[in-house]
Length: 74
Image (cartoon, rainbow, N blue to C red; front, side):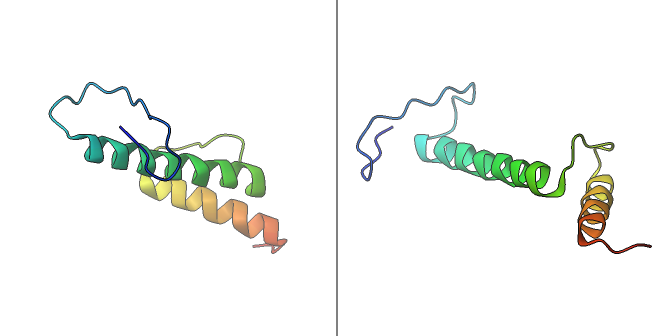
């Protein structure tokens, strides 16, 4: 895959051989945004690990960490 802005060739590895290069690049881009989101959570809210794996569990833990950082008590 060629990046017209940066000019270097970008090599992406995948086992999704039915997808086109643009689709694969979009998947990698979306995944990278998720990684940056969780990195910001860990750094800014001091979340060391996530206790649950469901969407609701993550929402509760993120909300609780944010509430604690604000310094507001229950």
